[in-house]
Image 1 (spheres, rainbow, N blue to C red):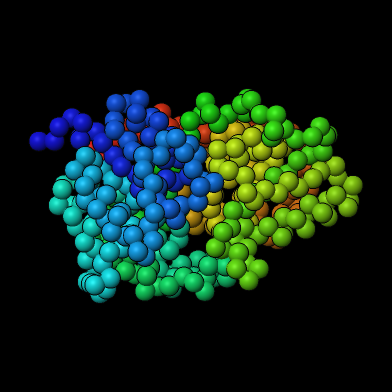
Image 2 (cartoon, rainbow, N blue to C red; image 1 turned 90 degrees about the vertical axis):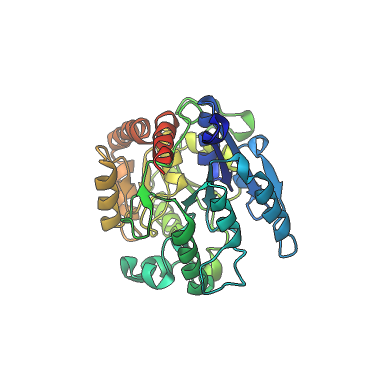
Length: 370
C-alpha cells in the first residue's frame, strides 16, 4: 500500500501557464505534495511564479540523460505525473513500436501518467486537424509547414500506450484512449478579480478613450506573415472605427510576463482573444476571471460540444470572426449596457467553472479513480 505522502503527491512537468501554479497552490493547502519541474525549453516569461518551480534542467541534445536520470531518481516520490505537451521522447531506437523507455519506467514504479495536451498537434494528426473549419485554422498557422505527422502520430501512439488519463478541454469529443473531459482551466479568483491593485509601473496614462486590448503570443506560429489570431483584422477594424470618430484605441501587447499580464487586462474595457482558431485561449479566460467583456471566435461544433460536456448554463463570450469583427465592435461601442451585461456574465462564468478551489477537488476525485 502507498504511504499517505506518496498517495497524495504529484509532479507537473512544465506548467500550463498560471493554471498549474494555482493547482500547486490549492493542492498544497489540501496537504498534497505538488511540485513543478520546468525544462529549459519552457519560456521564462510564462512562469507565473518562478519561486514555486521545483527544479529546472537544461534539456538539449547533449543533456537528455540529465533529465532521464532526474526522473529515474525521483519518480518513486510521486503517485501522479502530469506532462504538459509532448513528453521528452527517448524512444528513437524504437521509432515504429510506440515504446518510450522513460514512460515505461514511470509506469513500473506504479506512478499514474496524466497527459495535458498543449496544442492541436498533441491531440490530432495534421491530416485530421486540417479538416476543421475547412482548413482555415491550419491555413493561418505559421507552424503548419513545421507540423510533422510522423512526430504527431508517434506521440499519439506513445500516449495511447502509457497515459492513464488524457485531459480534454471538451471542445472536441474524446477520440483517444483514456481521454476525459474535466474542468481543468482554473484561477485563484482572489488573485484574478476586477478589484486587484495595479502597480504604478503598469498604470495606463489617464485617458477617456475606450481601451480595446488584444494580446498575441505567437512564438513559432507567425511564420510567413500567418497569424492564427487574426490580429490584422482586429487592427483594421479599430482603425476604421477611430476614423469614423469613435473614441477608442487598440492596446497591443506581445512581451508582458505572465504574472503581470492581468494588470494590463484589468485596466482594459474590452479584450479580444482570437478570430480564427475556434475556441478560447488563455487570454479569454484571464479576461473572464477579471470580469471583462471578451470577444472570441468559436467553431460552432466545438462550442456545442463544450456546452454539452460541461453542462454550461451561462455563455459570456462575445462571438466574432474576421468578417464580423468591425460590426461587433461598433455595436458594442454604441451599446455600453451590453458591455456591462457581458461583464456580469463573465464573473458568473468564472465562479461557476474556473474556481481553483472547486476544480482542484474535482481533479483529485478524477485522479483517485485511475
